[in-house]
Amino acid sequence: MRKDLQFGPASNRFRYSPTCPCGKSNRDGKFCPDKSDPNAGYCHSCGKTFFGDKEASLKIIKPLPPGTIPPSQHPYKLMMGTLKHYNNNNFIAFCKALFPDRNVAGHAKTYGIGTSNLNQGKSTIFWQIDMDCKVRAGKIIKYDACTGKRQQHSVLARNVTWAHKACKVENFNLKQCLFGLHLTTGNNKTIAVVESEKTAFLMSLIDESRIWVATGGKENFKYDLLIDLKGRNVIAYPDNGEFENWKAKALKLGIYGINIFVSDILEKPTLPNGWDLADQLIHSIQSKETAP
Image 1 (cartoon, rainbow, N blue to C red):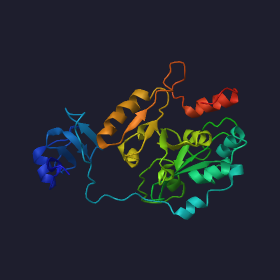
Image 2: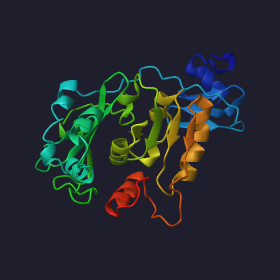
Image 3: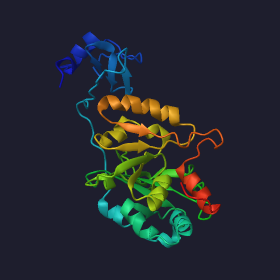
Image 4: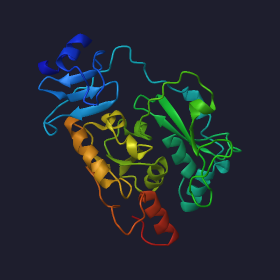
């Protein structure tokens, strides 16, 4: 570690940088500044990285603050118990109709896609499994079996919920990882990053040359989830309208050695905002055009 990035007690950080660039006091020492620039560093209070005047060359270390609570995890047995009842699962039913010649159910088990008992057992659980095969989270979504679009849960206020909330697990420390991350262990294929779990799974059914993973949201294209891809060959496919955002983030991630090529294949004014590879794939199949 560089000497100029080694900080001792919180009081030292406060003397060097009394405030975080976000405006909060640094009396508790949660902002870790770079000694070459007091306006550059990482703030554990607001969770933001500041690059100061040296964005291109600054190398910021993000030490975990003392007393950090480790991420919670679901019992592996719980996840395995959901990898069934695919005939009642709306999302799997849609995928089977789209790819009648593929072993969709078997592939779903590989990815860790289960069936929730919510909404008459028609909802889908996308389990997030890290590189150590620890089950970090379960994202529950209900789909329409005919269109493959998300539906509003009949028993929930939102169309997405989490397994730990559905199971009423108290004090669950949710720390997400990429959906499909466990498939990268021991596999040297190029990693393709998309936003939605649905897109990652559908693309994996037609393209086995890459490992398809999902951030689970456009704002999840960030250090905390992508650090696991450091040193790998990575291509990101943002939805239409998000190319510039993901490209700017990828440039900053390069500071940490996370090198990601961001494709602009979907960045077209003729496509609807938010159009992704799954939309393109479904459109191509249903219109009997050539798949991407």
